[in-house]
Image (cartoon, rainbow, N blue to C red; front, top):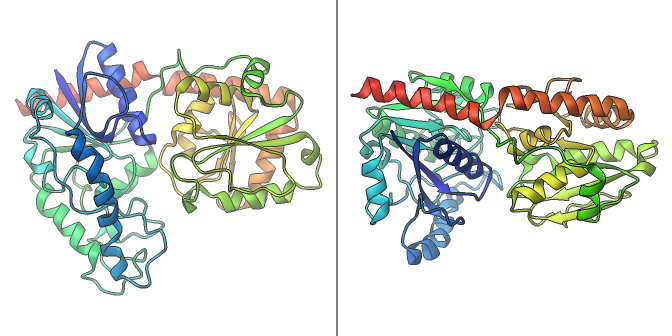
Length: 420
């Protein structure tokens, strides 16, 4: 059995990291796995990419083309969050073509923006597994619908575009997907129950098989280490409670809920937490995220697992005020390192955080309740230790990479058997 994972990159971004971990886990389990990516960062010989000149030029061109059609809509949101409906489909370049023909299963992950066309999916001509890292595969172009339900019909009148026309860009993109994918043999993997439910209600994927299989972590890598040692290595203070906030790849994305975190921290001013607590911020371009009256440690964009493990182990709680999200890697990684999490009760958060067992689920978009959750976790050392122990046990029982690999293996085998 040979699996070909198709993704925009190997380790750039949350979806890529989840896909690459699965790729490694499959190979460690004796299952042949290769990756086809547009942006390659690792030296893994089983990861194939496009010619270097193309890799240098095309991302810049396509990032411009990405936003060009949305500019026709004057009332669009400033950050509509669209992936372009075009791409080139690099399945005919040397080892990428060979990897394609060797595969029994094509496992698609995140393919927006650069290299894989809508029409290219129907040309795979083998069983396809598609992991939903966001909602784009079953919408008319948006990565997250932000409460819109028009993807359940056929899009059009897109609120993100500020469109009043049924036959707008979102309807056109939806129609291309419908045309090119209706005959494809696609099985959906949903990392969270939340996105699985949305896929089942969608007009594009509602008739397809949907399996909920979460992301997996190598728990020999993501594990708790001594807090004092971690703080010493990172240069963080020993005598304070530390709250971690991370922004993934885009610090300015409204979905990350920075404004809600600002409001929550403001409501904690004047309490005991003001004198005993500091913030730790990770992510690109985060130094401009201002928290007045709070001591803040900016660690920048972290690339490697070891440094991330140090950060998760050094802090006391991770806060994730996300407005809409699937199954964020940061929360899984934090829980694996015995660090409890506080988040809004939205998206895939309930799949990972059990309220007042390994963290705190605040009422959606209520900064005061987010602040309550932070205070509740931080105020009692014994409680926080118990939350951390519960967090580790939950990850061991539900998100261990070896178990997630096994679930994928069984899915692949059933699809190959049905196909032959």
